[in-house]
Image (cartoon, rainbow, N blue to C red; front, side, top):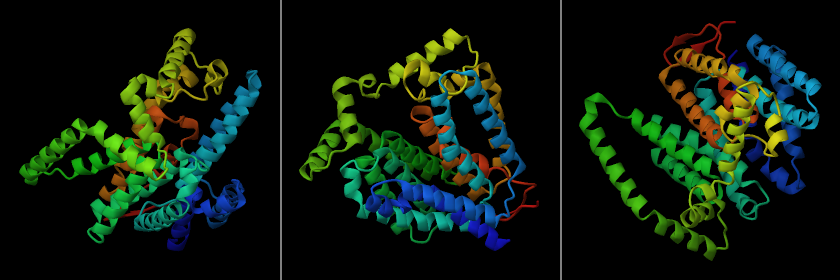
Length: 386
């Protein structure tokens, strides 16, 4: 059983870092074929390791969601849009859901995550020119580096060993995200640090905690006051080394033109989304309607996305998700609860500003990880009874 759990954890982590771990092959072959081959191998090995047994709840989601897509394919005229989204949903939704549902959250999972994070960081440093030259998506780079940042931060705060090393890895990954990644990933890292710092506040050390927070707020205010000068200084250094940073340039563009002008068209997308909701009077429009009606792929906000897709039915869906997370997260011990919260921070940082719930892997991974069967908690371990 322990060997089976370890293999499931390894396969899950391999999928999580698949873009990073196949990077050398992608650069060599100049295409993404290696990702597809690796994904198929991971799925096959998982099915073999688990004797093709799938959690009934995962099977239910697979059947209901694919049935929903098929009904849309029958009813709408924009079948190409629906089919493409269904294909993306299988790849980024159902596969992560299945793999995560087979995982037992324990120390082994963190260990493999940490190892994969270190290897991925090394790979990205070796092939950093691919990111600088925009041969690799800055968005994908930011997401993969955030996975690394999460586990390095987790070990820094929760493990007293090698704290200096983990701090260096945290600073390194955050710096890479800031220079070459995307805005949502930077926000995610800041939110995660804030979460860990807030967790450290204890009543018995309240004076120390207040002093520490006061110092941090003072430093942040000083930084904010000189923020524009710091950003220009960073840009000049990067230009000297012929490095163009999407994020730094976006921030400077915001200084010069305002927040809405630097939102990459999100203000327009939000307006279209609200107009559709008003026009349809909170009735469901189904899969792909937003792209068909506006030309934009998705609304860049999970609430608008859900309301446009499911209409008024989205309200009980959101409520049920909150209840599901709250109920199942209580079954985990303190350390495991923390890692789920960090993943939730990452998922909803993206879902509020950038992604769609259909193809956000972290969201579906969280659901899979929280599919726990009749849990009994002994110390830091979870015993799963079938």
